[in-house]
Amino acid sequence: MTELSPVSQAALKIDRLPDAQTVTQVTHWTDRLFSFRVTRPASLRFRSGEFVMIGLMGDPDPKTGKQKPLLRAYSIASPAWDDELEFYSIKVPDGPLTSKLQHIKVGDEIILRPKPVGTLVHDALLPGKRLWLFATGTGFAPFASLLREPETYEKFDQVIVTHTCRDVNELAYGRTLVDGLAQDPLIGELVQGKVTYYPTTTRETSPKMGRITTLMENGTLFADLGIDGISPDTDRAMVCGSLGFNIDIKALMESYGLVEGANSDPQHYVVEKAFVG
Ligand code: A2P
Image (cartoon, rainbow, N blue to C red; front, side, top):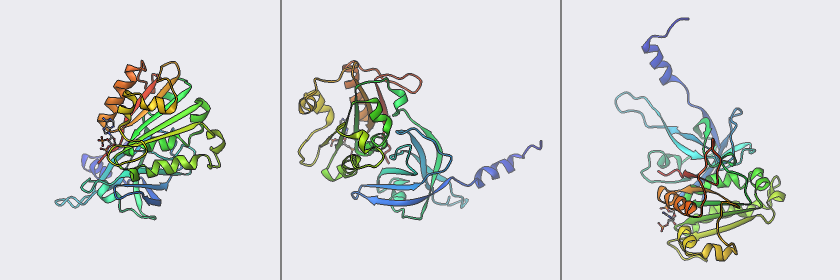
């Protein structure tokens, strides 16, 4: 076997083509939020709730003229059975990736590394009766996948999804998805009567105001749903939001006696940070 010289090795690395996928649909939900769908690599297998690295080629280096891929972790918002892949993203005006990504159009290509990972998966939870999905902002994305996953309804009698956003229009993606579940030809029948949607806003008036953490602490959430509370005997939870949100919900889950799980150690609840920036 001939060994490559260090120079050839470097050239190979730079010239390696990224994994390109074609954009098939783009929806702008607000001036801060959009979702898009891309083709799915034939070889990509993933579990609903996992994330992959996606992105675009960055600007050419002013000195060398070389371009490097600009990649970020994104939860796959479509279920494992879907022919395409869906993503839900914030638009950060000066964000290195999202300032560009927000302008993608049907027919454009994005880079997608086909190595799915993540802890918001059924494998990381013990069986239970009720599944809570707690999201803020774009943290709804992995739940958009799990809410369309048949296993969610085969494993749980009830699924309660809470979504806290600043403003009412930021709830639109999640609300549209939940509203469409019952009509879904593949999972509509499985879903019937099992999903409870609990949206809240913190900075604009809506029927339910306040952070979900506050509404749990003061008992409003449980009173509204007619549930005694959260218990490790019956309840399982998945959490996806900002770092502060995840820390606060984690503390609440632990206070109810739930133990954090992982792929290698399934327990009562799992947490993942939503993509930002
Ligand atoms: P708030 O408006 O009180 O900060 P963001 O857009 O900053 O990611 O926030 C999304 C939503 O998550 C907002 O409604 C925000 O409420 C809420 N939020 C942020 N941090 C926490 C937290 N630590 N616990 C509960 N909700 C939070």
